Image (tube, rainbow, N blue to C red):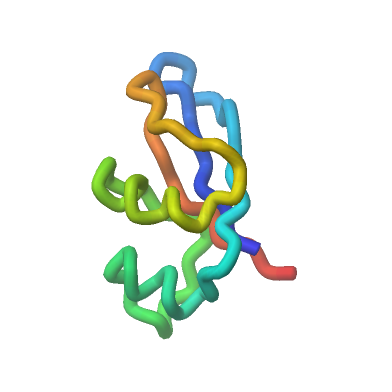
Length: 76
């Protein structure tokens, strides 16, 4: 499962993570413009990319301007 992670801009601490459901790893890398062959554990995402990723979050989600966002790539 891959996650959209929200980090507080001031402290740098992880404050929330949202499972990205319904998008597989290859689609996610394509959306983020990451070479599919590269092994990666996390990457910063722009506000525009966060908006696109929001459709894969099943719980209510609003972009928080006090946070920076990353996608965390996890193997299961």
